[in-house]
Structure formats: structure tokens, C-alpha cells
Length: 62
Image 1 (cartoon, rainbow, N blue to C red):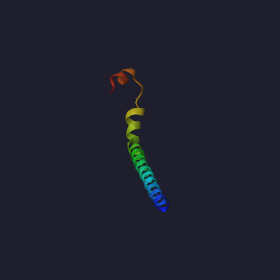
Image 2: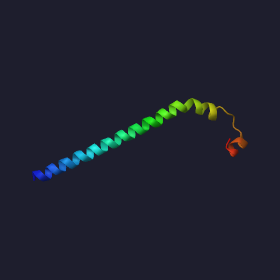
Image 3: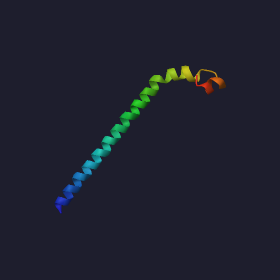
Image 4: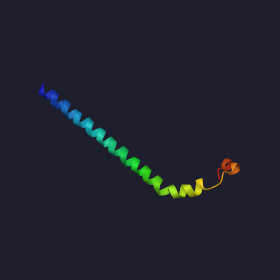
């Protein structure tokens, strides 16, 4: 019975470790996306949000 318990404990530790690694990867990717957004926010505001709305410019993609 102890061999089964030991094997189950090893599997549990492995699963918890994989979950923790996944959470770290998700956190790292989220930080990269937020950092990129903050770094380019001033350019986005200047190039996209300051312009007046012009239907012909929006249709042509300029």
C-alpha cells in the first residue's frame, strides 16, 4: 500500500509542478504584453486617437 501511496505522491507533485510552471509562463507573457502596450501607448495615441474621423481615410486604410 505504501508503494501506491508513494507513486500517487510523486504524480501529485509532478502535476502541481506543471501547474506552477504554466502559471509562471502565463504571468511572463502577460507582463510582456502589458509592457509592450505601455511602451507604445504614446505612439498609439498620437497616430490613431488624435486624428479626426475621416470616412474616406478609414475605408482606404490610411
